[in-house]
Length: 430
Image (tube, rainbow, N blue to C red):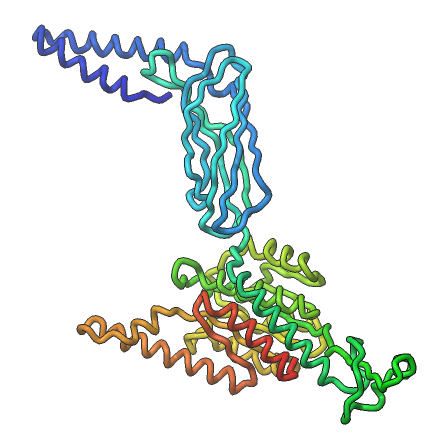
């Protein structure tokens, strides 16, 4: 049961006859009248429990995009239902309007559409539907909550996709240069061209030479089935927010861009999300299926407030591949105390693999280091400078153990990691 503002107003109006007559017995009589009217109104209100509700939800939506969720109501009672329906979505689902007025005739139905604009990745849930049925006098309402759970999977934003076309163009240029430079029996046939002095005579294609009357050699593509293993740290340090998103989301952005680029380059890409346990894994997928599998694995993962067990990572990588691979560790690397486990595990990885540590940095720290206005900003600048020195010490320690370091702000880290991958390709290290 719920009372409306009209009931409150009606009770307040009881002061008028009390003041006019001056008889204190008027007030109890007035309140009794209000109670009777409320009881009659409740008796005449349609039962909200006779309404059947069903949901129509899309399977998934990318973070920041909008989607329409539909709620279908069918009234099974014998009285017209007039009232309000509230669809209980959690706040991070970004529902634009959760309360709607309805008027349902007996046996009738209605479809209510709610636009959702989620602002957090993961599984956004709706718990129940609350229906408030008003009586004809609109003094009171019968109310019931119908259990109607619903889930909407919010996928990573992948805003770094805009960097992919330019990196693919550079990859094609790189493939063209390396195809010409590879001599002799390479790994993958590319094309035929005329012989120039200095070419390996073993590359001569005698059949094509006979057809054209000039010496023709074969060109070969570099090996295209390298492995790229991306390990994303989902421990407590990845929960810290940089700007309006946790560091884990930036790591996912970098992993998606690198996965899309490496897959187009013909490399095998595997993903492991871990802290003290494996939170998600993608293996054996390629092309568009790779990106779909990656975003589906990433979507429900939230940072765990536990210390990441880096001693498990070498074994996880061995479980993926035993051949020399590019291993990318996407983890915050700023505090010397927080990266001890990482530094202890790096020698096992760098002995066999090419390792890159990708770490997001907070641009506000660099901005704070420039402050000199007053004592407060000077102290803040000193703290920021100390943080920058710690970050440099960690990067130096990682490089000393044989790994590369790529850092950048949330907007800069994904393209920086893609550029580093292309640089490794151009240098022949991958």
